[in-house]
Image 1 (tube, helix red, strand yellow):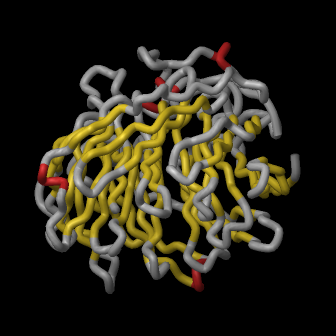
Image 2: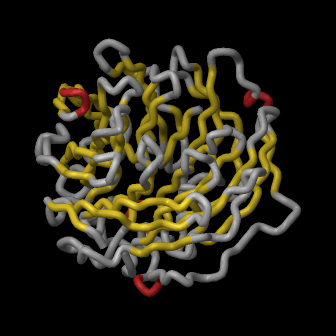
Length: 411
């Protein structure tokens, strides 16, 4: 493993790869993106939803009782058996019980979701060949307005996040291997893209046809933006110009060839990050230098999958930093780790079955009392109660039915 410095073009592996079986599945799907759709920095012209905005209404159940939270669910709308849009639900923070309340329609293939720090706007990727990001204004009364969509300048966007200041939306184009920046207006609506950076170097890993940006997040101190690229086995560190909305690369860290890094999660200290490697079925603890943005990967370690076919998807860390959880697709489990050495070490404690098939995404409730897993192939969401002292997971009833559930956002 090594660190270096360097940006640029890539060919697409297609969102179809992500929608079905992960890295090794070659079967094409209706949503698969052609390699010819690789992005350039000029990109296609941005598109915006014309006025009037689309309005959605939820059932009266969306007016939440005390002790409950809202739950947004991402899915694929173009895939057979998928949902009609972003799923809406509430959950009981004590029992974990989920109650469906409606759907936000008019957002195509919203496979990943993020909330503005104000809580008033929801953002979704449109994971399609001509990728987009959509803004949705939220209302406590149950009505929601789709504010508009902007092009990401690439294909198959699969992840997005809001910069902590609330003025910029960051997104990752999986198929094109690029990352994009959009300004956020006071209304929550998105402006025209201000930057598009493609991952040109280092070269793709074994069996990869090009870069595949899988995640883009801001470091806990807000000083750097990190982009995880599965195709290049690399995590890139950028500095965001918060006036111009442009990214400048300051370093990159390369994992061992064929690792396939997918998602990372920071320890609350901001000095360590934990990286899930999809292709070689490992987890890596990385040291992080907040001053320089440099990430230094450590030694790969077990996901608890016991040697079977497995594609680790995502890690989350409890807010006090004592435990971490990993979604294991294939093994269909959540691995529980103790965080030791002030964040420097992970120790595998056990794995717990999710009671479903292919857990694509993990999310902790804001209180930390509940853990949600979206089980893509069994079309449901599992909920676990989290023991505050031991981090032990206990199933909270039967899974909640949800069509091709691929992202959960509890608020």
